[in-house]
Image 1 (spheres, one colour):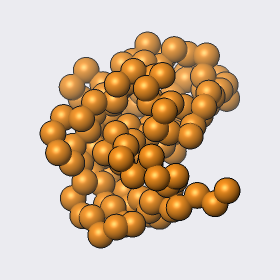
Image 2 (cartoon, helix red, strand yellow; image 1 turned 180 degrees about the horizontal axis):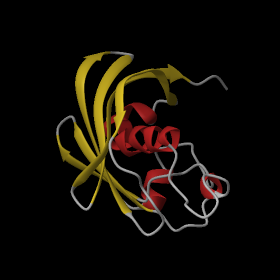
Image 3 (cartoon, helix red, strand yellow; image 1 turned 120 degrees about the vertical axis):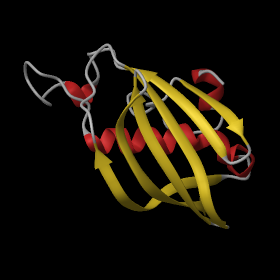
Image 4 (cartoon, helix red, strand yellow; image 1 turned 90 degrees about the vertical axis):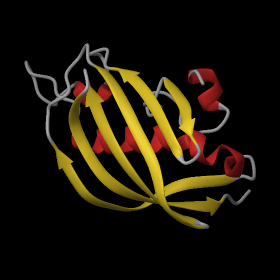
Length: 141
């Protein structure tokens, strides 16, 4: 699914929409992609002369790339929100020009709670990995 199709699922919009493509790999597994252009707001001071994608942004990218796993629930006016982030490790820096591969897999589900294993790779090299708890919260009008 491309960026416009993702916008039909996620409520995020620029500059906080941080995934350009998302695909269902198989039931319970998704993959997303984002290419770092260099002009993103989160690079403007992180760090001058050596821009690096912040870890918290990488965590947000993982969550957004998992959107396709919750596409059906999102039609019911549900908002996926973080409830926990565990065992996160950062292995390699991500810079402008890098094409980020985002991999997610649900390993626990008891609606409305879901636990996801996620990782971030660039050129096949692991940059970040962790476990993320997402809660699907019913939106109020």
